[in-house]
Image (cartoon, rainbow, N blue to C red; front, side, top):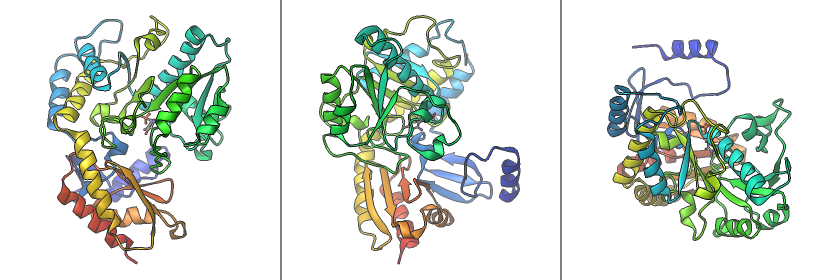
Length: 401
Ligand SMILES: *Cc1c(COP(=O)(O)O)cnc(C)c1O
């Protein structure tokens, strides 16, 4: 038995303190379960921010990884490899898009989308040199690189990281009038999340995506959705935009669960016309599209399809919402969600959701507070009804008046 305290002390001594993890040390995972180094078992309700939708160490994804790792892992894009094509074929078919450009982390895919829409703006829309504007929405989360924090409105993400990248215009989320007013002849794209995850599971009004897309189309502005967290089954559809009619984006950004939680794989998807702005030498990544990542990504997509994870998310998410509504407490302000993407907003007078996440940890449920007052519930999509009963029982216990 290892002493968790000792491991945490060493980790804290030697690592930058850019996170504030719950005080436990995990060493094993299987499906919805994870174990700490003392052998205690927990139900994972975070799924590594929805990167493990398929469940921890899914045997088919691990098998694909090991099989590919024994053959070849990295070729660079200087040569073709025999895995990238079949992976992108599957991804494009599932997303009903023409082409994909593979990267590694989510933030890199967002950066790639920014480059794509700017280049499209100059070369196809005809925007004057260096004048391109991209509209983004308040409280967004698109990652931690300099471009993605330049898009952010969150003081914590930005403080003392300036100067920021110009060319972003911030408007309120869920405000179509603001969108219409923000567009100028230089606007090349609107980039946003269809549900704001890190902001606390903020769901826009019904029809918002459809209307936003329409306004973009009318003004020759690309409609770009960051589905890194909401995509691949999380909200009860394969992609969150499918909850609305005619809300298909021009550029779709995916990551997180595209890796099955195994190895970073991200991508942007778009039409031939947009993607063809990329020509040899103008963009790239040493690891993007590598055969190991591609084999893992293909297996991760296959599992989502074979196990009907989007449908499961819808059915079990509805069940979770119904059960949560039965909790009798005055600590909850609102419960909101789509599929197995649920936020429980606590009364601000309680001093934040952190202490409740710590109490849940002691009861074997792992959650992480988001935006201070919200408990996010996003378990792996392979979860069963009985486990949802367990989660709701424990939440009821920690929130009882
Ligand atoms: C997690 C996330 C990102 C960033 O992904 P990384 O892999 O951490 O770089 C971007 N956008 C959204 C919506 C996310 O949830």
